[in-house]
Length: 169
Image 1 (cartoon, one colour):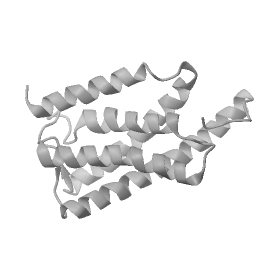
Image 2 (image 1 turned 135 degrees about the horizontal axis):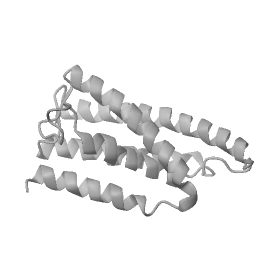
Image 3 (image 1 turned 90 degrees about the vertical axis):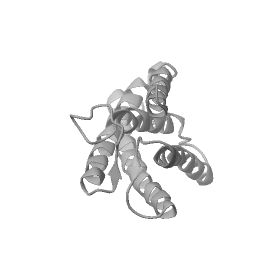
Image 4 (image 1 turned 180 degrees about the vertical axis):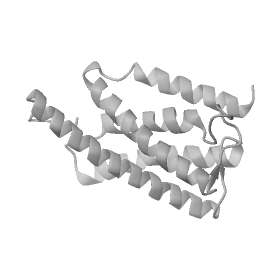
């Protein structure tokens, strides 16, 4: 088993195992968080592959798509799910920014290290520093868009179920 395949198996196992730690009363929030982040990741990744900014030499479905499936559609959305589930909605703004930065950093540094040390992903444009900055900007925008949607969805859901006191957590 190559390093790339080991990493793919490991992130799949971690993502699937983490599902069992989601509190039962948070399944709906986790599912909508997973789906919305997966949708946004899919669109952005396809665009970046088509313009030649990213390349995936080792892919799970090499005949079907030019995009790495497990990292973009399982692992990154699961990291976002845990961001939403652990987000301190009632906290000082510095703690919220710290959570935001930590979860984005997990994704950014995973991408960077797999791009540098494996063939899972090749970042084609820019210097290493500019790639890290671009990744932070891209995933910050993704997290903000998805968080706004999840907040809106949670408020709408809370109004329908009668839970008005605490919405997003």
